[in-house]
Length: 367
Ligand SMILES: Cc1cc2nc3c(=O)[nH]c(=O)nc-3n(C[C@H](O)[C@H](O)[C@H](O)COP(=O)(O)O)c2cc1C
Image (cartoon, rainbow, N blue to C red):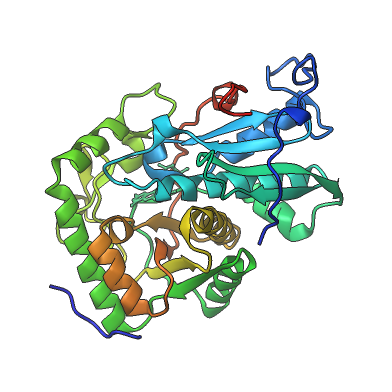
């Protein structure tokens, strides 16, 4: 049993419904590359580029659980109920985190096109899957930081390989911390050695609990070590190192047990990666979307800084571990994401669905 010290946004507005759609339906420009509708005064190719950037966001098991309803005056972000992972994520919290990350990428991509995004986050009980609406908020050139973060979108990766032992510097930590704060969240870096031991112990316990859960294992098997050619899930090659049972910070095996043992290959995992816990001030589903945006800003900032990252989500998915973690780091807010941060070697990109596949078409339920 792990024990340790206990220490004690965006605008709201009405959702746009039928009024945003002309009597002839959404405007469709003839585009060579895509069947995506035009919107927000952009061409369909430009809208396709926004959705491509959004779709590069991270998501649990690479389920890519987002959909976009593109109307002339608004792009709506909807969670896809078919792509929620009920064993690991029964409440849809991690799905909303992923959607928040996609929203952050979409915001950046709009900035890249010189458009200020006007974002409405929804808390509306009628359509719990409608998470955000993005409208044209005026023209403004992107800042250098926005350009840097946008350039990092296709370069960011989840890196489950061993990192080097080089530490994350105080300057880099300060930049990561600021990135979370800019998006209304808090990044707690777990530095205290006693705290680190407790977090490692909680992670190992939570990992063991999930390994003993057949529903969780079956879900992992459906989404990881997937066959080549699939456009979602985690292909075997990105998880080709199988962590040993003794590892402190990397435990999940996404290779279907087929990966090479890093122990036998003589490449040890780093001893002391930076471990960071992201918490958001806002609570509930709305708070999850905010946390997802903050998570993505932290991940992209890390990429800009030349750092690499992976997740330790068993600490959040197992409710008892999450509660102990919350008490350990203090404060009333529930931890949302736990990250391992360091320096590593390049890893290949995971696949993504086509932009057309991300489109949600208006139905009586969506208007
Ligand atoms: C909310 C959330 C939780 C995640 N948890 C884990 C995790 O516990 N372990 C892990 O290795 N990857 C985790 N991931 C990373 C995903 O597996 C990864 O984003 C996905 O495979 C896509 O790959 P990419 O991040 O390299 O684009 C998580 C991602 C998200 C958004």
